[in-house]
Amino acid sequence: MNEERASRLFAGLREHSTGPVSDPALRADVAQWVREAAGSTDTRFQKHPFGFLKATLGECMHEGTTAVFRLHVWHPTIRYEQSPQPLCHSHAWHLASYVLRGPLTNTDFRHVPAAQPPLYKLFHVFVDTGTVTVARPTEELVGAEIIGGDRLTDHCVYHVERGVLHTTSADHGTFAVTLAILHDRAAVPVMNLRRADECEAAPFDQSFLVPEENRRVKDDILGLLMPANA
Image (cartoon, rainbow, N blue to C red; front, side, top):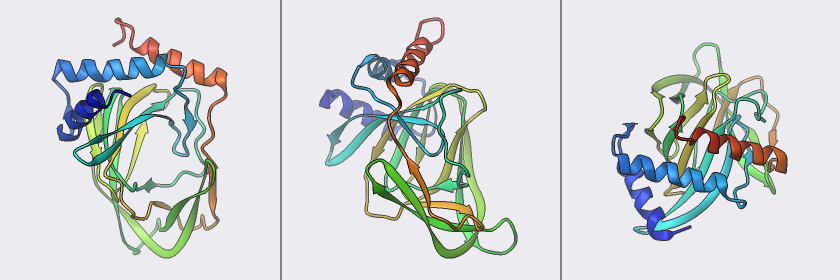
């Protein structure tokens, strides 16, 4: 990864407010990043419990901050989501994400004192072994309240602050692609909200795709970037 180029792109996306990107240079830079990643033999996608696929591309330092670059792909047929799904989740880092192809819906939540159904429990998320993550319930019973959200179309940027409960989803059958930058990681708990009756540990193996599936995902991304589709 070219440190100077990565630092410049990170700065541009971090400072951009949520909404459409009109700068043609920034749009072209993101498209080139994704094109190069999809064409690289080093790019390997992993399963993610929330139904999308992720590939870590590398990291850079910018003004003392580590930024990790990832591709996130909601593929219409190659999906390995955890069942049952949590209502929402949080991160230990800030997220700046460029939607190359949407649409996506991002919804922000907060937990509130338990009052009436549906009721949820807070789950702590841990890395168990290797690529396996596990969610373990706390004893805290809460309600959930939507506090914001955005409908994100092609060439939009959106942000999720560290610790904020949210969910990002693609319409059924949609092929969506984002360039996600994870930055300013901190030692804070990573949480899920799950229905109160889901009280067992919820493991998920974020294993890598088999080579045939990995190649297909990358080929499909390159197809999106053909002039007629870009």
